[in-house]
Length: 414
Image (cartoon, rainbow, N blue to C red):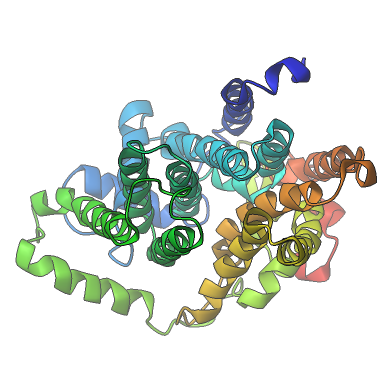
């Protein structure tokens, strides 16, 4: 069956996306109460859709607009809070599929990466909670996929694809500012591609016009996302106040915060040293828990894959393989440079997704005879780990308050 489908990549993508959406939606109403940072973003979404007044002003509006859309469509309940987050999770899965397809043109590689995203664990959890990271992951991965689509477009089709990428990048920045460096990375990719082979990449489009379109369209999209703020009943936004408000947001995001029990340093995130309990208390008559924990097979194995991509890509002069590893490195370097007083494990969300790009790229980098069935074994190991942790990822009923100890591989996970 797969042999028939491998020449129909978007049919494969549709099947994987449907399965991911069903998984993300299964028992979406548990926990039935606000979880972790939902206590900030759900009330802010309610206030935004009521056009009442500014709320949660340290972040832009896009994610809260989308959370509020779910509430309007499905009600002010656990399903409504998280409904659109599930779509963001599915979009992330499809975005990674598209990235790998554009890079390598192999259905096996793209399917492998998409399935790893489903089993990643943090993507699963962020797809089932009303927070910013799930939307950030969706917009950034889809923006990168659109950029690669434009990169290989025939003459005459580059502009609309490039514009699509710019809009998605603008929406990503409108979700969290940490997406802004990816716009700069995209501009650098355009300049590098036009320098390396101007006739092959972004055909028929000059480097400077392409960079200008990407930059200006993403900035315009970002500022357009503030449109609802102009209609607040109390303290509405004005054109004169739009730029000063950006400064205010920066001050809010870089303020010195008191220590937090779940704070952690950026270098510790890839090692899974300090995950976060999003929820652990009785709910609907039973003990439930949600631990934001990456899949150890993918996260620890992914570090080896990143190194393999950088090494193989450099030796073979393969931009696709090298770029798959460099994407993860750049994503973590952003957090090393950002002037935040506190760091948290969920900041690693995008980097965890990019491991699911690096792992298939690393397997692709070596001859088939030397890795026969190894990728399937890796995938089954990731599936086994996902199923092992499933009860404390999905808020399934647990036996009691001490049940969490069964899954605590490290003392720092408690």
